[in-house]
Image 1 (cartoon, rainbow, N blue to C red):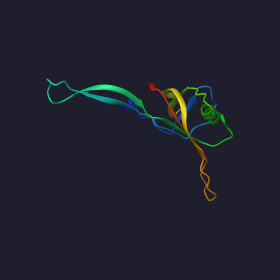
Image 2: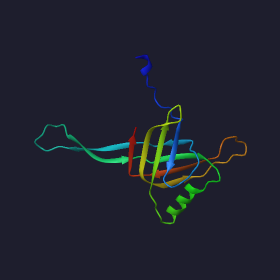
Image 3: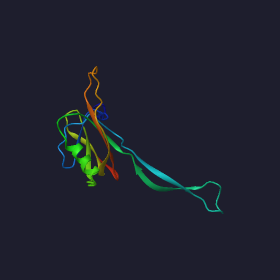
Image 4: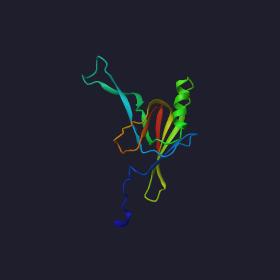
Length: 144
């Protein structure tokens, strides 16, 4: 039916929640990926094509970018990790529809910061100063 059209979600309508932190909005989230290792196995009396078995699953690091403000919460988390206190948190990325309602959610499980990049400054530039933080994690879950 013509009225039953379902359009895909837009990649610029999202919000990010970091467990226990009140960081301002983010301009970009990247790195969502999961890869399964493939283990090839063959016994001597089988055909020449090996079996393919599932191995370990590996998750790519998640990267968040945001415009620099007075907020220090994410940087303080990084500093705590640098001092040996690795606190793992859940990061939730929520896709929004045209009305601003939650439509899809990805949870990044047991995340902790592994890389921080300070803004680049340029005396002749006119862009927003961006900070970047990369998180290692142990899982990714999606819900509708």
